[in-house]
Image (cartoon, rainbow, N blue to C red; front, side, top):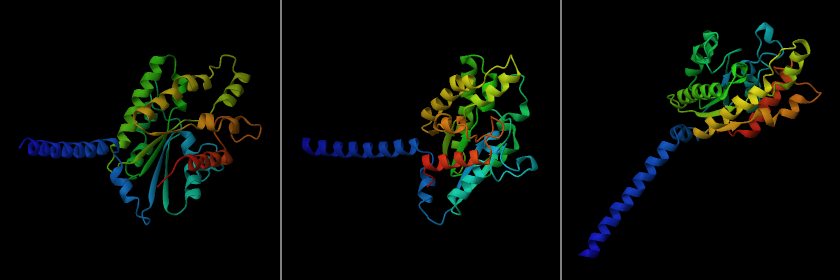
Amino acid sequence: MVYVGMKLNFKKYLSFLVLSSLLLCSGCSKSSDKKTENNDSSKVIRIACVGDSLTEGIGAKGWQDGDFGGAYPQQLQLILGENYEVGNFGKGSSYVYNKSGRDKTLWYPNTAAYSKSNKFEADYVIIMLGTNDARVMISQSDAYEYKLKLCEIVEHYLDMPSKPTVIISSGLTMKRYDRKKKATESNWNERDPLYLNYILPMQQEVAQEYNCQFIDLYHGLYDDFMDINNLASDHLHPNSSGYRVIAEYMTKNVVFE
């Protein structure tokens, strides 16, 4: 009788372990249902590119006439092909940290680009926001506030009905831009060190805390954008060739499936 009792308890224990494992798995991946659906080869995979002018495509050929065909999302579409739909939800001058005194209409959640991204039913969301936040970084306290607001944006996309996979990307080096500005403005406050010391570490932390892939364009493409063969249109924004390099880097480092 003692043996039978032990056997029954062992079965209950096994059931508990199985149930616990299932609950753990479901809590670790908000996109598990979506991944199953994507096994269907006929499904078009939708990628939302969220960001500022580096996403919108400022500096690409024709951008001043409203042609953003050279932006990285559009070039990512060309590389990936017809089984993918890539949406460009970039807004120039937009930012994450709504610090007092900033133009509230450019806080990314207040933009039309953000509203459109919410209706896209994305399978993947690439967030590249932070370049414009570097300019307001004064202390680690500012960096922490930036992190909190970035967390809110990440959580928003993770909780969308389509349960997308969220990817966080850094921006590019701004050293060339700083050099150009310093040549004409003696009191220019360099942005590249502010980005490197305050923004990029917070992006990495948020990616780690939410188990998101982090794409380090800053270091990964540093030599490309500092090379004499200039890929930038104005020392800050890429030209069409520069945006092509970003799109190619994305496809080499992210598996969209």
